[in-house]
Amino acid sequence: MNDYQIRRAESKDAPILAVLAIQVWLDTYTKGVTGSHAEYVLAEFTPERMLTLIAENTVWVAACDETLLGFAVLNEQQTSEHGAELSTLYVQSRMQKKGVGHALFAAVRAQCPKFWVSAYHANHNAIAFYLRQGMQQVGICDFMLGKERHENMVFAIGGVDE
Image 1 (cartoon, rainbow, N blue to C red):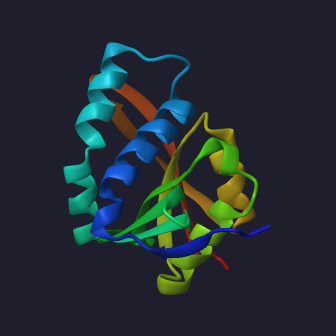
Image 2 (tube, rainbow, N blue to C red):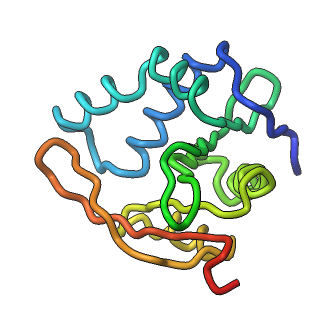
Image 3 (cartoon, rainbow, N blue to C red):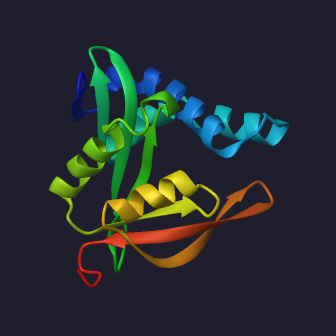
């Protein structure tokens, strides 16, 4: 049942996106909250940063009226041989496996048929999702959280042996 719509993010969405990003990030990457986690999310996911994100990128939201369920960010300035970067695809945990991620992915793909994304190597749900969408692993990269290195897998679609 699709009682949500995919639409472009608007400036009024910034505070909601900030809270949604914190919720999804903590649910996905932590088993509890440490000082470094708190510092990261409170610095990275602010309404001001979300306003900048909306202004400088293409951002889609899955919305049910004024309630946001997920969002995707296409950064067309961060390119590689695999195209633009899908820098974020976050879906609230209770809305996963209900088509929200697929609908956001389809919106990105409709605008940009060739892009790449990185996923934390232990985020098995995200990895399985990207593979189901037809992406292929093309490499690895690191995400630094303070001085901690976290290995990410890089996936691409469009022009990768399709």
